[in-house]
Length: 356
Ligand SMILES: *[C@@H]1O[C@H](CO)[C@@H](O)[C@H](O)[C@H]1NC(C)=O
Ligand SMILES: *[C@@H]1O[C@H](CO)[C@@H](O)[C@H](O)[C@H]1NC(C)=O
Image 1 (cartoon, rainbow, N blue to C red):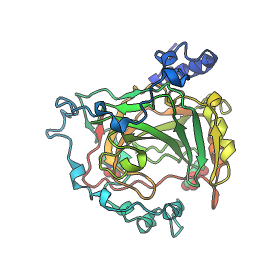
Image 2: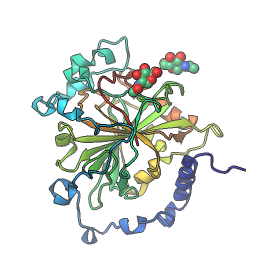
Image 3: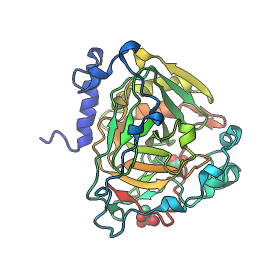
Image 4: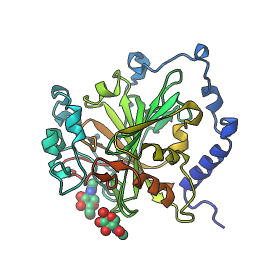
């Protein structure tokens, strides 16, 4: 009997084991207990990565060269409009956008909410395995601190998505590095995009397929002091996207325990604080990051659509049950049920998409 059809099942098993061991705090997860230190006297805060000179490491000249592509990865960033020169939009303007194609603030009119949404390097896009440029000599993508627990998690229904923002005090934030990234990127928040039924929902489309749910883990470049500061810089943001597919063997299981918190933020512009005792590390959300992934230069998928994002989109989906999807579909926006909160795919223009 074939026990594991794909590595994701091992990840799932890992998560389940992790959850069952949780009361013992990480017996099966290496490096976990050493991170789990709540005494502020014994933990040195390194949250302020921006001031740490070690935070920049020089690019490896051997790395990132796609053997199938004769040239170096494109210097598309140089063509970017200098986003720094444009003022940040008023929050009220960004809050006005809608996903309804018939709405005057619908996706095709987002460029009226913020002109940058009409740019040439927008996200999401269609991802095709056959046309991606394969990167053969690659640096591994690393996510350090994946088992670190935050002090609390702020869960928000911001009217467009369900967003989990981690609040760190004495523990290091998770840091993403390697792969296409030249510097270290600090974890900020994750949020989701989903559909009214399970044939739609994801923002990226992988080999013509849309998935019912897509998670975006947002990181900012540690060279800058905060997400806000970084978001206007050409190399400011990295977003890791993962798809979910429906776990068919049981509709009612709770595979992702954290979806349980969603009922607290059904109303638009509501929020809920997940206290320390209930917090969960990123490991419990995405498992190990050992999947092949696409990478390309794109944008935030909501206004102001800043073209400062290095996208990393996993090819292996995670699992979600219909019960969990329905917990997302019960959330409300200002205009009704919060469903189909995904932006239509954008033109690729001159960009190249790499497969790591
Ligand atoms: C992916 O394939 C679709 C359909 O064949 C095509 O329209 C699209 O341009 C392709 N995208 C990329 C990034 O190659
Ligand atoms: C799923 O929802 C989409 C978007 O609303 C709709 O176009 C499609 O027909 C629905 N599919 C099914 C099977 O209900």
